[in-house]
Image (cartoon, rainbow, N blue to C red; front, side):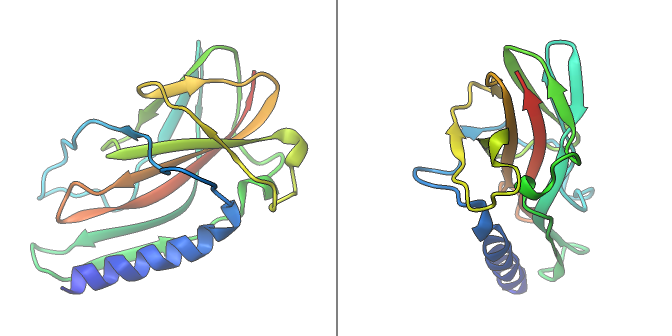
Length: 176
């Protein structure tokens, strides 16, 4: 019961923090990732990292806002963490830059999420946190890099474990 309340509070806090992201329409999660291989004895203490690859170029995406819960010692009690970050459109010059053309593939450090989605803004929107993002259709574990400069956001959710899980967003700047 306590785990459920803590997870609910963290989720509500995370949603409040993400309101500025202005995700519009449809299901926010479009693709399921492989099942977790992490055991109950060794739960991740926070969301892992995300590497983004286009051709031979690889960058580590910037992890942004996240909420996470880990049950402690097999009890219903645990630890919940919520962390906030600036809006990606406020991070001009600070995001990892991926240059390339063609398909972008996503590779997770640690347990892959159960659900992912992607959206972006053209780089003409730097500083405009009211700009509406565009949903990106996922193809397996990736998507096509758009032509020109775009700010990308990958949303991830881990929800298959009873003992741990949460949500996180990742950012990078792509030039196609």
